[in-house]
Amino acid sequence: MFAGFFVGASVVYIDSFTPLHDAAPPRTPIEHVVVIMKENHAFDNYFGTYPGVDGIPSNVTLPDGHGGFIAPHRLNATWTWDLPHSRDAMLQSYNGGKNDGFAIAAESWIPGLGEAAMGYYDRHEVGAYWSLAENYTLADRYFQSMFGPTIPNRLYSFAGHAGGLTSNAIDLSGLDLPTIFDQLEAHRVSWKYYTSVGPHYTPLPEDLPHIRANYRMVSKIVPLDH
Image 1 (cartoon, rainbow, N blue to C red):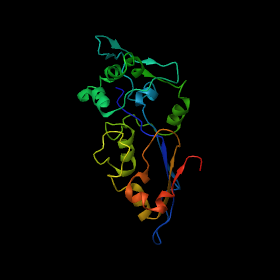
Image 2 (tube, rainbow, N blue to C red):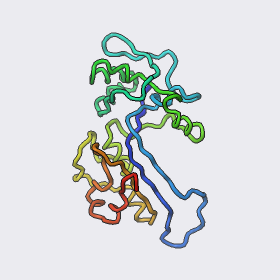
Image 3 (cartoon, helix red, strand yellow):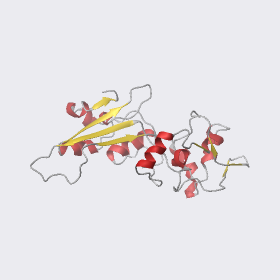
Image 4 (cartoon, rainbow, N blue to C red):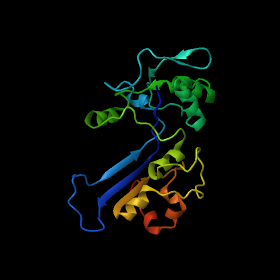
């Protein structure tokens, strides 16, 4: 049910292409690619009632771990408690493929939180997202790369795997993974990585030793307001 998670709050901006040698004219008018990564929301939390999607099943309820059941319900507030998103909590939610452990995982973390885990928004609260879905493409079976929190999934976004990391480890000096940015550099495709500045740590490409040692690549990792 609530089995898809958005991850992150950073932007990869891939700009114009500069070929190594004379090349044929591009076959597409696309000049820029922007990837925005967000986190900690299930597909059903934002789009579960969007028309025509594989969203919230009719008449579904999930066990709360205390002998009761909780039905999906519309949230009337834009702020709720943060739900657990560790690897263990996600495996508990997934429950071997049954997808029925979301309320139990939340209740195991903070009693009473199962209600929030079963809540969803609709057009009234997330109208901008629904507008994007109406005008572009909405993938209702797109899932995060692995069961785990921010940092390993962020590594997946630019390195294709997390090097075995399953938790929000701060020190990434032992991981020196090849990234998409290395490929862009090798093919002379210009790019930038925009990141928010705040008290919460998120992994950056420069946390990988070989990128940290490359001034040219580090200079392309900039705050969002640049």
